[in-house]
Length: 362
Image (cartoon, rainbow, N blue to C red; front, side):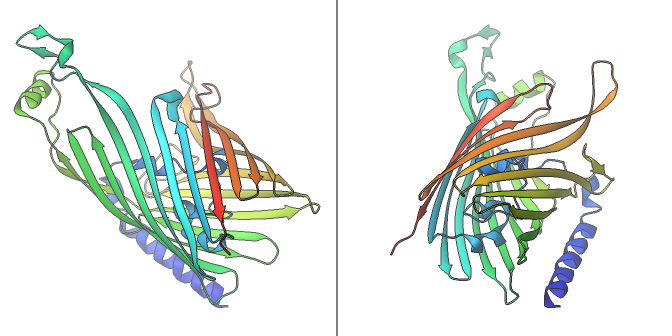
């Protein structure tokens, strides 16, 4: 009975949160801080980021902090690297998680998404003369820093968690932004291998304060090319709610299958998703994971259902499939994913690698 009451309180709070963002959804930009929606860990990529109900390792600090309490090891370290968009961008992740008590866990994580070697041509032409020696390179980099905590409740199978995150974005010396947000989550696991999860991301609305630093000469270049000179501003990231359900089936002592479905509910207005309204857009995605002796893992997933126009300007539905592999060697977990970042027709794939190391001191 207490579980249903707790669930009712959480859902009521989320509904109130969504209601207050109804008017903001019409004025705030979509896809704010979207680099934090890419995901972390090759396991998640291989399952199309459908892991919020089943995640039980250090990456739970990003996906669902409440899942940190299911970390089996005293200490876990995870790193990930991907040459995203066929090498155009570098995407990296590092995290450390530890069990501070039998019923509580803590983690620290960092996400970096950067495009390096961008040419700065603002000073290419001076007094009508072109000089390529004045072309310099800069990087556009986004950082996310997470501190996550989770604890089991007095209700068997129920745990709660939360994350405080700091966002730092910069483009060379031209602009910088700092932001702060909070995530909260709950996870419930039954005795018959069902798992349910609810996550509220940016529940307080994340604020990014942008500051631009252009010289008078650089501003003159903007005006002469009919471009708007950016000004200091405040960017809002509205709350997102993710619902998840997972079921693990043990066929034999050696073979098992995990299936999961998630639904991302965005509150920044109408998006090109499978479920959409003027206020909330729902993006469902599904994933599976087959394992042999908890050593070898085969994964697959599908998500990002969208409507696009083909060459004949006719609407068609597209989706993004992903596959992945995992290998566990004692205290080392090696994961790989082939992740589709375009629809199945363009087949623009990225390779994602991640490693998780476990430490269990005596």
